[in-house]
Image 1 (cartoon, rainbow, N blue to C red):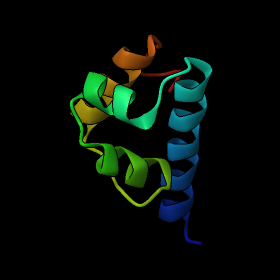
Image 2 (image 1 turned 30 degrees about the horizontal axis):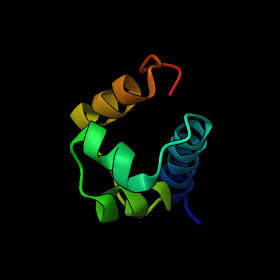
Image 3 (image 1 turned 60 degrees about the horizontal axis):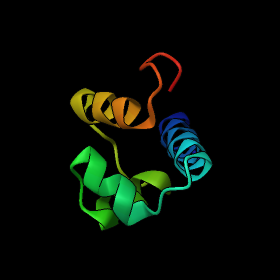
Length: 69
């Protein structure tokens, strides 16, 4: 796994952890963020490189700062 893939995987796992701590399903959380559920699933697996705007929406939906995410 190269550095870029490792970073995307770690980011996706962090999103998944925070989502699960809130007790939200992928579908519920994807709706809050404005993503399709399958796009969120791919992001959580590290297979998607989100834009900064998407990362900001994710942080907002999780109720955490962008820097913490």
